[in-house]
Every structure is written in C-alpha cells, then in structure tokens.
Length: 400
Image (tube, rainbow, N blue to C red):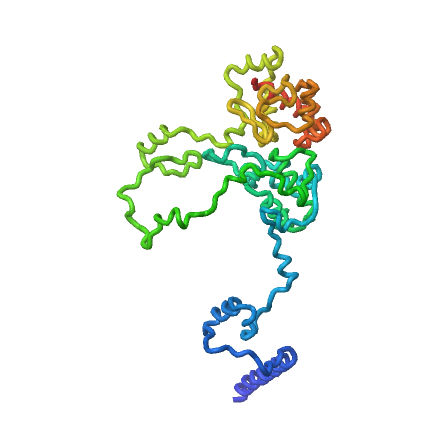
C-alpha cells in the first residue's frame, strides 16, 4: 500500500508542478482575447485548411474578420516588381560597355556559360545557332531565338549570377547584357548599352513568335472523352532513336530497320575533330611545304585542341561556329575565312596583309589578347611551347 502511495503521490506532485509552470508561461506570454474579436460568420468554411485558404483569397477589405494577414507594403511590392517589358518599361537608368561586360561575364558567368557564352557542359549556350531554328536540332540562344532584349536584361537582373541572384548593380547588368549580344555579333566591341539606346538593338528573331491562338485553331482536337486504350488498330515502330539508343530491339526486323535508317549527325559529332584521311601524307606535305608531320606530335595536338573545339571545327564538314573553321589555317591570310564575321582587330590585321604563319599563330596562341587587343576570343592562351607546337601540327594536318 505504501509503495502505491509513494508512486502515485510522486506522479501527482509532478503533474501539479507541470501545470503550474504552463499556467505561468501562458499568463506571461499569451495575449488576452480582445473584447471585439472577429467572429466567423455562418458562411465561413468549416474545414481548417479551407478556412486558411479562404482567408488569403478574400479581398483585403474583408480579411479583418478572420484576423489573418495584412496588405503588402509599397516597399515589399517594389522588391518583387522587377520585370522589364519589351518596350523598355521598368528599365532603370544606367549603362555598361562590352569591354566591361567581358570582364564581368568572365568573373560571374563564364564558369557555366563559357568565356564566349558558348556554354559549358550541360549549361545553356547563350551565343551561336544562327540559322538553325529550321533544323531538326535547332540551337536556341539569345542571338538565334530570343525575341526581346528586355528578357535578357530582366533575367540577368532577377536571377543571375547563379547562387548569388540580384547581387549585380544596374550598370553591371547593362554591361553583361552588352557582352552577350556582342557574342552574338549584334553589336561591335566598342558598344555601350544604356536605358537610352536599349530599344535600338534589334534581335534577329523578333518576328519569329506568334500569338497563342490554340483555343481557336486547335479546338477541334479537344474532346470530352479522350481515348485511353485500344485507340489504334496496331502500333508499329516507324523510326528509331539511333542517337539515344532507346528504341528496344525485338528481333531481326528491327535490326533491318536500324540498318536502313540513316545515321543521325549530332552537333557533338560535328564539333569533334575529324581523323586525318588515308591520303593525309599528301595533304600534310602540301600544308608544311613538303615536310611530313610527326604523327605523335599531331596526336598530342588533337588532345590540346579539345580546349578549342567548343568554338572551332576542323575536318570534313566543318562549319563556322562561335569561332571560324581552322582547316588550312596555317599559311592562310588572317581574318579571311569565308562566311565568318570577325572583330575589328582581325579586319585591321587582314587589311595589313598579315598571314597565319607558324610564328604568328604561335604568338597568338600564347597570348590571344596581347596579340590582338580587342579580340572577342577571351581564351587565356597556351602556356607550354610544346602544346603550341602540337596544336599547330594538328591544324597543319587539315587542308582547306
């Protein structure tokens, strides 16, 4: 009996202490119910979740009856109201040059988007893609796809740099935007973008968008009872995703279809450096004035060239990209690749009659900006003489 009294007596004392503490806390920290506390009317929903949602859905004038929320302050609205319209509405005063933008882009953006806005890994490409929108695999960049420059400015200002959004000043955003459109050959390297000349920049795809009229033009596709099973008499594989290799193999018939299907040519394949052809010795001899190239040196140069192939292509089927094709570049006049738009410094070198000799190419590869001040190419250069010799030999292995 005494053991039971001791047990229950201790529990009772502990409970009393706990209740006393809770009362004192509530008395000191919980506000009294106001005399004229808002009362829910009979129309208010009874479900707690619906009550909470309804409180925020009510107009500001009627929220008082729930006692939840308040009207946003003008400063709070201004902090979120950052959008810039295509007509320039919302742009702050400020300006920024291409040259300043190049330095800022290198510091804040190049880690993801590349020094030339060509993209790194799976991060987006911001430059290039001219004339590709009609292709099967279009390259959608600021220059090839975006219809309004205001979208660029607004996105950089609102969301960039990644992980440190809204840390840039208005002038810095103008400068970075200027460098992006310069990388797409829309302005020259001495251009200064500001709120005053913002609308003068014409985007190539400004007329490439139409109003969304699907409610009218596609209404005949919509039905109240969509088909969910047995919608077709038979399902057959008519094409194969050869690049992704996702179409299942189910027998000889599928294998035959795969053989008949043309091989897909991807951008990565186009960018990859082509292997020298079987008659390479003749081409090499022509490119080097009769001296055959060292195969090991050429192989080393192919590895070094990987630093360049995101912008430059060589080999059969090479095309101008962010940088010009480099077939036959050794011995070729500087700034004279057909179809490529050069910056002013290369146009001046071309006018002077400069030629890409081995010596000139080596000087450029060692210090691109020092060799051609104002060049768009912001690659820091190759520090090792062996790398320069190797990549020069590799380029010599490709004739025009």
